[in-house]
Length: 102
Image (cartoon, rainbow, N blue to C red; front, side, top):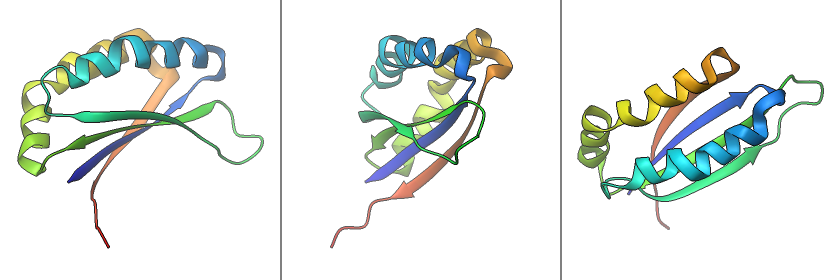
């Protein structure tokens, strides 16, 4: 199982709008094909005094091939509208991880 996580840093003035957007628009579009499942949005706590708020958006993909397919065929339908809406007030980076069971 592959975990696909994107951590976003959001300007404090629009964090509520960002959360609503993620729940109402970003997640449904990201999961509609079934290539990404199990969405989870979480607040990331950082150092005091840091400007803005951070959120981690996590999905599960069956394998790297499924994630690569989503990235090549669907990610633009999700990422482009997010960047157009929030512009420089949101920045993010993604991490791909493989779940290790024990």
